[in-house]
Length: 430
View 1 (cartoon, rainbow, N blue to C red):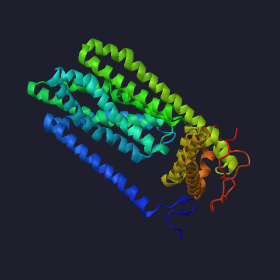
View 2: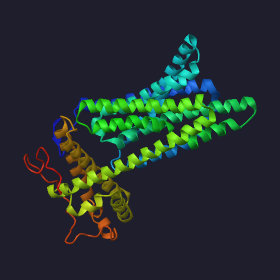
View 3: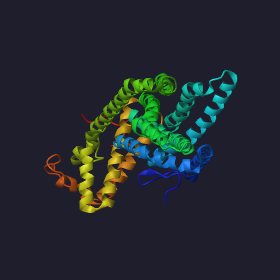
View 4: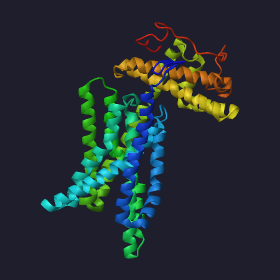
């Protein structure tokens, strides 16, 4: 029997202390976020009433679904851990919103008592500084404490976008609920529709756009081996986020409808399209990163050479999964998905090692990622259809390679010290 902290099969066995930390940390985090959410709910309810909270929540659900779905669609090459994505959304919806409510209202009251104009200064100056800091804190925290999960700009944009989506969701409840209360008092029904159209249809990506600047900065920092570049990238991203947020709030507060519309059309829409272009470009870079590593994996014996074309594109991967699902069911298709994810994880890690940005734990991470790939491959090979059906039914884009036969199931290959798993790892095959 393996001792705690030694390897069993292909992965390190966590010690009892590590197991307790891995279980307790998420539980404590969820409890804290839940308390923050309840406090926010109480504050919003005291402001707009129970009916306002219900109407605001129902209306706020309309834009948040497409926004979250968009970021999950972006995060397809190397899907981030679902637990971290959930924490990102809850951080924005609960902790960031509560912090912003308390600090913004307190600062506005102090400014109003000292010089007047607290509402305007609070909206244009205080709110952008505070809100982007507390939203960006989650992204920077991941960069510092979960560096292994942070591979580049796409990851930064995804995490920043989900934090901001959660923040916007709770903020929309407040604004729409307030509009509903005003409608009830005036006996009208137009305010809710106006707020919903503005925040849900014309600007659902406003907060994600602002915080994406921090995400991009964090992504650049993750890819740089120089401390100065890392610090500067995050700092510049934060300044840009604050500036865009201040411009947005200032145009709505000070310039009136025509001025706000001009800023929206001249600045925000082109910037949103530019960020979308950057994300698409970065995703294509991720695909190239994986494709460049795969021949080396096949040469090292970690994957079959015939799998290289299927793993090199999302279309090939989806076709593989769909064919397996039709032929052998969801369980076998799940084994294929896990195998594909493990291949991607190792490819990204080796690219980071080649850039010199993996840090002192690079060898340990490499061993763990390779072990995960081999385990996932064993599970997939345990279902022969998982590695054959897609190539038999994949169409002309993915024909069966001449002379290819499926690898037989069996025990994993033994990699002795100094063998294929040598260190530093060999460069990818060209």
